Image (cartoon, rainbow, N blue to C red; front, side, top):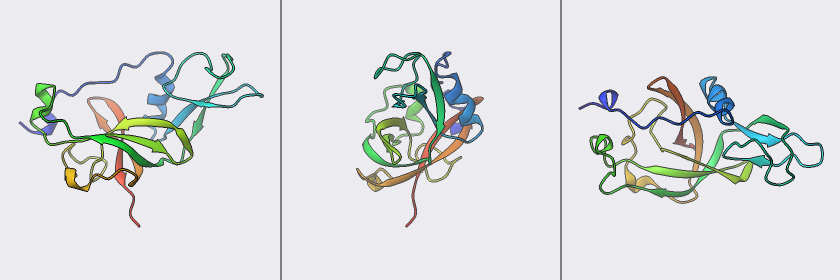
Length: 150
């Protein structure tokens, strides 16, 4: 079975998170922020109300797409049968460089359209610098991550 034949989990796109996926389809990493003049805090996951000040005003700020690996896991064995065909693969948590309190979950891959198992698990390091890339999977554009080159 090839990776293109695998049925991966798809994100649940609700009203609050829909702009995140809209911008991802345009190869932009944007994070929801409070639009209140007295707050301006970033928040993820997206939600209707600011947890810092209670405002319902929001905007979507463009991020640099740079970050670092905050944590990672290589599932052994994969919990879902569909993912067994691409094991070993990784799931990483990325702390954004321009928003250190914001962390996103994704996969470290060799390039935007590379397979989930395209990076040797031995290359994963906490603190490694990464850059976002975008790829279409089953009609949804997903952010994935590649190692930054020095």
